[in-house]
Length: 239
Image (cartoon, rainbow, N blue to C red; front, side):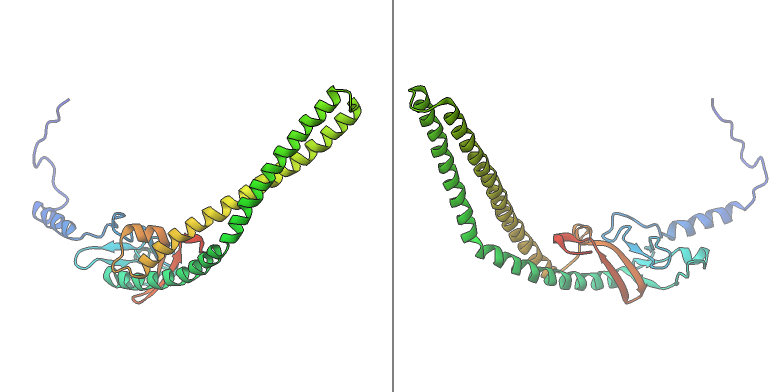
C-alpha cells in the first residue's frame, strides 16, 4: 500500500534547478479566465467564436488564444484591457437603457390613458353578472308557471334552453373581459417596473455581473476600441 520513494534513482530529464525555475515562471503567468469576473465567458473572438483568454499578470487583458494555435479562423492578435472594455460597455449600457426607457415611457403613458377602459371593463363585467342573475331568476319564475299549469312543459323547456344559451354567451363575454382586464393591469405594473429599472441603468456609474448578465449575451472584440455588443433582449427588446 505504501510507496517506497528512492531519490535520484533515475537520471532526471531536467535539472532540479531548471525545474524550480520553471515552476516560478508558471506561478507568475496567470492567464486563466475566471468566470466570476463581470465579463466571465462573455468576451468572444468574432472570428473563431471562442471565449477570449483573460490575462491577469498586470492589468487584466483579453486576448484570443486560438490565434496562437492556428490561422484557420483568421483570428487577430489584438488585445483589449478590461478597464477599457468596461468603459465601452458602460457607455453602451447607458445609451441602450435610454432608448428602451423612451419606448417604455411611451407605453406607460398609453396604459395610463386607458384607465377609462379599465373602468369600462369592470362596469361591463358587473352589468353582465347582474344580467345573468336576472336570467336565472326568470328560469325559476318560468318553472313556477309550469308547475302551476300556466305554461306547458314544451314551452318551459324551450324557454329554459334559450335563456341558458344567453347565459353561456354572457359568461363567455365576462371571461373575455376579465382576461383583457388582467392584461391591462399586469401590463401596467410590468411597464412601471421596467421604467424604474431603466432609469437606474441610465445613471449607472459602474458595471457589475448582475447588470452584464441581465443585458448582455456576448461581447465580440474586433479591436482595442471596437466592441460589438449582442444584447439579451431584456425588457422585451429585440436582440
